[in-house]
Length: 131
Image (cartoon, rainbow, N blue to C red):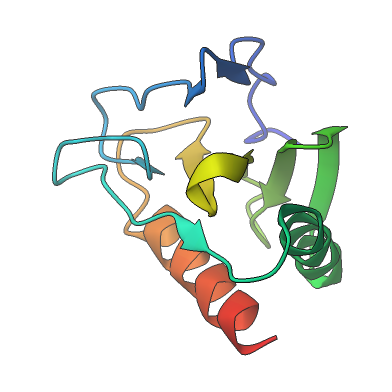
């Protein structure tokens, strides 16, 4: 795919933090403090294991997704947009002691994503809370 871009090698969790968003507006993160990038984390009332299992199940049910990295508290997923094939990197980090799943969704290429990353996370939130 011409618009897939190169898979980043700087993603993951370091000291309880996902990689910060770049200055471009095509990224959202629940650990960001500025209004352009900030999005709320996912919350849960089940056990952490149940919550993370449900997120993984939900992700696997969505079209054009591929889990790249998986551990007991972290997921890195590639979402490929239809037609043009742009790839976005989406991360989920289970913070057990806070009962939240932090999220980060970022486009690999370009400056603007026309709100795609924010809408994706809000769609996942809606499906997750109604599951």
